[in-house]
Amino acid sequence: MAHGVTIACIGAGRMGRGIAQCVAYAGHAVRLIDAKERDADAFATLRDEALNEIRTALEAIASLGAFKPDAVPTIMKRVSIVPRGEAAAGLSGARIAFEGVPEVLEAKRDAFALFDAHADGEAVLASTTSTMLSTELAGLTASPERFLNAHWLNPAFLMPLVELSPADETTEATIAFVREFLEGIGKVPIVCKASPGYIVPRIQALAMNEAARIVEEGVASAEDVDKAVTYGFGLRFGVLGLLEFIDWGGGDILYYASRYLAGAFDDERYAAPEIISRNMEEGRIGLKTGSGFFDYAGVDVDAYRQRRMAAFLKALDHAGLVRAPVL
Image (cartoon, rainbow, N blue to C red; front, side):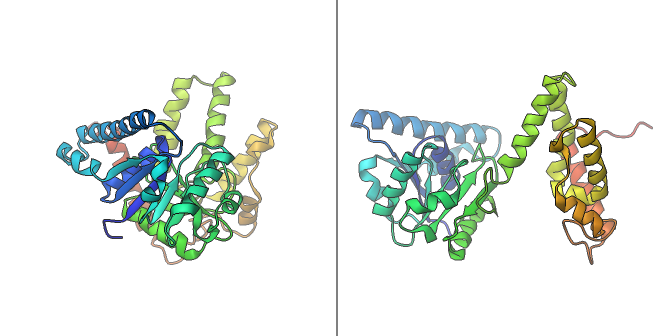
């Protein structure tokens, strides 16, 4: 997608500012629309605060060597902030409007009404909500076919992933357009059905709670739990996805480990889901059988393993953990 696409953000808070930073950095104009009614002085304070926050974030990243600091003024020229009373001008010509107001239904309803009243006929509305389902929110807009949820992970500028969750009415063209835009600004969009927790929050809630339980039970210190994640869990799954890792080691290992843990703790939260048992019964346990969650038919397994080992070494080297052999 070419540069020059105009994007709007309804809501000038943390999420809107993060998205504005991403969009402007990638060469597009972005208008932050204040969703609240404020007097002139209060709006001026908000505007200055938001612009300063975006500028400071860009300068901090530039100081770390990501880009040349003299590019910051050019990037900032693409960001504008308008009061609620000028929402019509803020939405005029915008191809996508990202809604980033607080997680309160009435706030969403109000933001959607602004979109319906002032957005162009082909514009897409994307809610950044992390708690409300797209199927619940679609009824708040007159154009549900051009609506979906787009859940950005914080910090928005640094995290590549954006979880797209369409409503039942969302057209394939809408999904494709938003995906293309996000890929064009360097993001990695994925699509999931309307389900509580999307993908990442659902997985990380389980992991974070389990880490807290380990500390609570006195099994290990907080420092050692986090070292285990940083130098074990994190490194491993930064190279191999969770499902890819099941296939790598073998689904049978997870099957038996889950049975052991469920029994040892007398807790069904460790029990494997039905798909693990079904894959076992069907002989789909990963690389060793040629299929699992993924199909390895025609894959050069040795070459695949070599590529993954190279990625592991790169990650270790980045962490300063590669050492020469003692001779």
